[in-house]
Image (cartoon, rainbow, N blue to C red):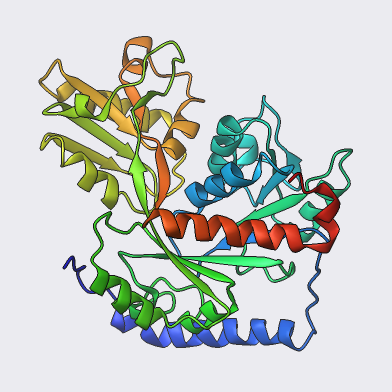
Length: 368
C-alpha cells in the first residue's frame, strides 16, 4: 500500500489558527444569518474550489469540465485572475496576455479559444457582466470560488489533494486549511486529486471513510496523466515524446504551489534533474532569466532541455529578454485529468450533465 508522510503542522502557530478559525466562523455566520447577502443565478454556476491553500489541481479539472460541456453549451470560466496587472472585469480575447488576465486564465483561453474566459475579483459582478453579453454563457464555471460566498453556486466541487489529506490538516497558519474540514459538507461533490494511478482498494476505503461524505455527496478519485512535451516559444517545433527524456539532463523551472509530482514523474525517466523552484505564480524577472541561463549553461551535456509547467509557460512566453538559442530549449509538460476507472469517469459526466440539463433556465438550450 502506498503511504504518504504525515502532514506537517506548525504546532507553535496553533493559537493563531484558532483565532483565524474564529474569524472564518464569524464571517460564515454573517452569510448564514443573511447579514451579508449572496446572489443566485438562473443558469448553472459550477464552483470548482478547495478548502486548502495551495495547488489541488483546480485548473486541470476546470479544463476537464470545459471538455465535456463545450460541445453542448456555451461555457464561460470566471476567475479572479490572480496576479494580473489589470483591475475589475476583463473579458479575454485571443490577444489577451497573462499580465491582463492571469496565467491560469491565459492558459485556458489558449487551449479553449471558443470558451468565454473572464476575470473579476468580484464574482457577482463578473457573472452579471457575462450574462449581459450579446451571446451570454449557458454554463458558468467559477474557478477557486468556494470561499467567495457572495455568489451561491448551483453546484460545488471541492478538490482535496491526496498528498495532503484535509482530515489530517489544520487551519492556517499552522496548516493549510482555509476553513475547517467540516465545511466539505457544503459541497455537492468531492474529488481527491493527484492520486497514484495504482491506488489500492484499501486506500479508497480508508480515504472514503475519513472524508466521510454525506449521502447527497459524490466522491471521486483522479490522477494526472502527463502528455508529450511542447515547445514554449515556437509552434513550429515538434512535440517531444516523454520517452525522449530517458537519461537526458533536465533543468526543471517551476513557479507552482507543489512541484513534487512533476519531480517524481521525471525521476521515472532520468536521475539528471536539477530544479529551480520559485513561489507559486512567480512573475519571472530579468534576474531570474539570467539565473536560468547561467544554470542551464553550467550543465555539461549536449542532451539537455529546460522544462516548465503550463502555468510557467504562460508567464515566460511574454519575456523578450530570452535569446533565441535559449528559447529553443524551453518545453512545457501538459497534464490531463484521469479518473480512477471508466465507470467513475462516466458517473462524473452523468452527474454534471444531469445538473446542467435539469437547471430550469437552460432546458431550452440542451442540444440532445
